[in-house]
Length: 71
Image (tube, rainbow, N blue to C red):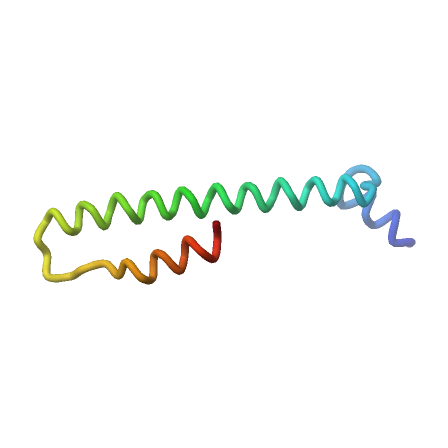
């Protein structure tokens, strides 16, 4: 069984390099959106944590590194 046939079986049709590139870009955008959602939730939780006057504090330097890596 050739490589093209295996790709056809797994993806349902032959994908050109352009199609694969578009797929990877879409996946990257999805991952970026997911990271944005996680960072937003982190901000909301850290604001709630600060308001509750708890002894535990969230580390903001860690968050800034996370933003730099993923955005």
